[in-house]
Amino acid sequence: MKILVTVKRVTDYERKVKIKPDGSGFETEGMNFVPNPFDEIAVEEALRLTKEHGGDVVVVSIGPNDATQQIRQALAMGAQRGILVQAGELDSDAVARVLQKLVEKENPDLVLMGKQATDDDANQAGQLLAGYLGWPQATFASKTEGLESAEEKAQKPGVKVADGWASVAREADGGIETIKVQLPAVITTDLRLNHPRFASLPGIMKAKKKPIEEIPVASLGVDITPKVRVLKYEEPPARLAGVKVADVDELVNKLKNEAKVI
Image (cartoon, rainbow, N blue to C red):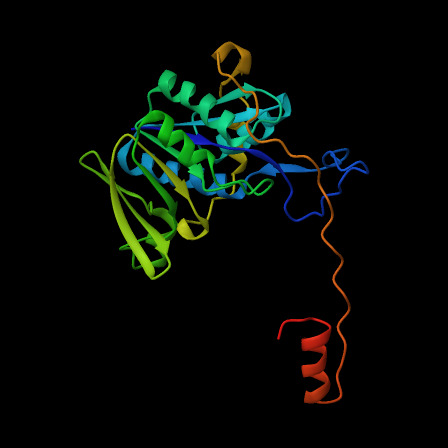
């Protein structure tokens, strides 16, 4: 079984991001970059699936040369090889078209992606990729089904694969729904699917020798002209300090005349 997994290089979600004075983008000087957390879940799921069924995990990132660091982190977790598509900032449609070319080249049985990236929160690339490929898709895989012990939950894949089909449990408005899709397919991962492993020291050492293929985006013949253009970034309005009220009448008055919520 061959699984293609995406790993996006994103800003550290635990740190505050500063907007440039002209609002054209973000200050990246001295900024720490990490793998997208949802993509780490996808890598973990791919590793569990190949442990159970055999096969290889290929990690793909689209971005600057520095993104090899995030690929190495996935290789240290246990993936076999990596691919870096050298490109600047792309919108979701361009990302999906680039990935389409890689999928056609690599011919995987399954594509696993984080449901969204923590920098733009677009939640579009997986769905667009499935559409361009004409493949079935299962989004927001989020529940480990049928596993009772803590040990099973820590090791077994949440996505069930058998007889050319994948069974995916996902959170819906009314609870948990389980859908089956025929492989090859695109599956996007949500938070509660698994807990990504930490890379071991031997894994980190082995990752240094694992191959990373570097592909200039221009060589893929993809039109990466953005279909979505960000005009400006702005800080959200500062939150007002809380106040104490003397009684219910004053509270109602403030809610009605100042907050205007009633």
